[in-house]
Length: 212
Image (cartoon, rainbow, N blue to C red; front, side, top):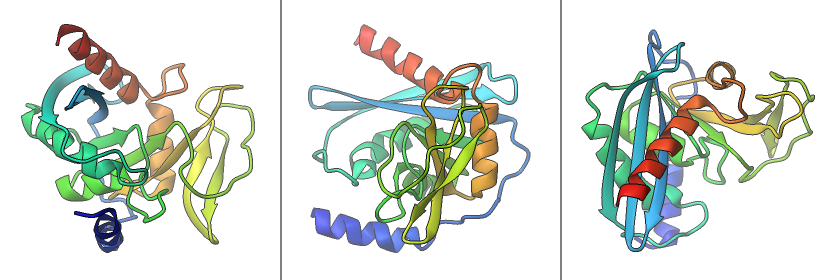
């Protein structure tokens, strides 16, 4: 579809995002990493036991790239291969934490929200940078956070996951509220800026690239 039609679809789907907790007991959390090589896109998913955060399951999937890179439309490029990798998991996670945006997106449907909605998994966006919105810098201590605002609406939070280290951008994906999203991101960080979910998925993706 055209970029204009894709944005129209995003706005339509965004109305279906659940911004309150629909979480059961969280015993497993999953991280997702996506990469490109030539005309191929691949996804790596790692499921970790929670709260210990040791690896419980993992999967990968590859597809031919079918959509060009267009800012704000990342989920149309990466979503299909992520759904393939989710289908291949032998242990379905209770929560997905994406290295990307949830509702902190111009159409309120970043990749964490889009895939969370399509797969019906509770999901959180934990991005390394801002896509939209305005904020003040949070305190320097781990756990400090401030709201990310867009036209008077809170669309996420800027969260310090490690003292004196750059913060991350946390937002609701689907079926989780913002307070809970912040809590799980912090609980999944083991002395690093990024949550262990993201780190382990990136490890698996790097291993895949080295062998293919």
